[in-house]
Length: 217
Figure: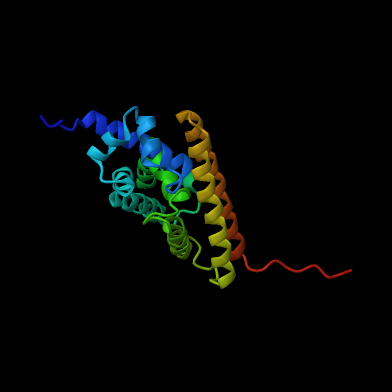
């Protein structure tokens, strides 16, 4: 009699693959290592999945990546023209969307880590780079609403790109290195507060115009 696939076994295999893809990356993860972590045989893994690529598809579906982009964009749009997040009422849409995004990141941290830092060799290899460019575009759109007097320039685009690369790397590192959910949440909230404060200071400074240069001695 043919063995009937069991959903709990499949879930255990997917969970093992998610952990290893996030910890080691796609290339360094083998089907055998997934089987060992899942407590089953390599042959049994192949009863559920055609191979490592199929495993990856189960771990990180396209819909999840789209949701991360959608929620992030919605959070920025929800800022409207507010220059200080602290001035928004507690029930503002911004806080609702920000809370949903944070919850997704904490509940599905391995998927987020893969997207931001461990996607080399997969169809998401360029996700972090493309996401960073989208964030720059969304940030500039926000600046047009909140600080319409801020001048656009290649230098600003470069600076924002560098800022977002660092921010995304820091988020991935927090999710990777802080297994405790409360600690990971606290770290992400601090990183986000620092990031938002830095951007606000940058835009406010640019809105005031160039600072006077000191005369050389």
